[in-house]
Image (cartoon, rainbow, N blue to C red):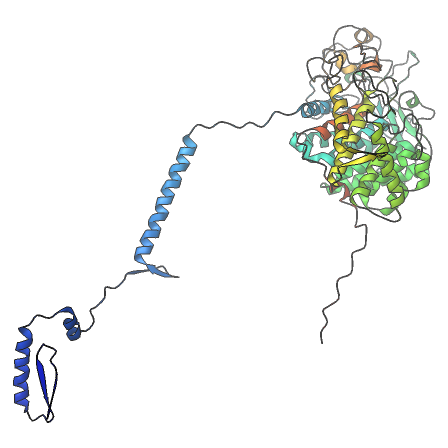
Length: 618
């Protein structure tokens, strides 16, 4: 029996059940089979059956060490990187070679320009051996014998410090207030000083003053019994004895004896000096050794002020020029600054004592209430303590008195607004904080500073304004008040005159100032010899840049006369307030106050909460 299968070569194939063929027959059959296969052409399928799968082309790879990638992908990636680098280099070359329009910074505003000039006034007022880069060409070393020439005092080195105004007297009381105001402005607005390029300059000005104050008492002791309150004499009687008021001579030509006035019970002066050193210690907190020296001196002075009660101006010629009406306001002012400088709560407890505030007049008005000056620091202290309530919220036991100070500060700010009648204004818009008395500008600049500062406090506390009675006013109103007053001083007034020397084209040319009115030559005038220069109608030969004069009268009138100091004399205290107001208004309005630096030494008001308990374990 046989079975037929399909012949893969196209013919039938007979399969026998019993293969009886021999090996030779099988071999012949295979040879016949091979010849038949050769005689036919094979298609692809047939070839694949015979030869098996064809060998595929191998891919090539690149070994990069950490990975293996296809050579094709590798070449493509490298090519893209090279092309991108060439393109980037080409673009960079085009940008560098293409002409560009320079983008200049906007010109500084008037407040910044005036600030730079106002600071120069302090360079012109320096006493002692001047630094090399003082930048006032007509000034030189002066009064290098201060202290040594007076045998009656124990303070033999009183060289340095600042002359107060147009004469050569060094009054510690207004000088200390000026330094406190400058330090306060630096603490709040250091970023604005830096933007104006004046931060180093103003810190040098402060240090020149604090270095001198440290000489006027035993600053290394914990307890003292005296202070050198004044160097020089301001006798107005017209006697023949040479003194710093009678003689019209350059400070560099002074050869007469300059007496030193000591005080043994002068609470107002000692507390003001303590405020100056304490505030400056915050300015110089990065100079740890100097800052600690200032703090120690401030503590010593304040202890003396509390132990030896009395007004510094009693029984001496300071009463004629800078008479102090009381020392309670200086107690609050000095204690506030010492708390910020040390973090010692005993100073805060004192500053917030209701009885102290009552003696200082914090709870009643009066014609001069709310006017910050070298004599009355209550308004400044209230603003300073309101800052604590706004940002630290100390709570009991301070909240009640701090809320009172805050409310009083709000009332004072209301009194600055034109809609209230606490203070008159001239037709030109100058507020009459001293009620028409002479030398008004020193009070105006202090108010402008406080108004801008309080406005910035509210802004930093996310408060849009404050209440005056039932009416709510935006902080912009306060800033507008400050701007109008400073703009008046800088020239927007009926006379179109700038009351800051060197600012603008029209400013006082006959400033009541000995150094500025006497030419720098080899002529040495005696006391009376300089009178002809004092009384001359000619302009000063030297321009005392940045000096803010005393100011106009209540009718916006001004007499540019050298002998009339009520119009033309500048002062340290006045210029310090001007500098503070200018820096507060200057530059970018978005740059507000520095909230934290003033509190850098203040410990946490509340105890640190205990850590949470450990997690429960079964």
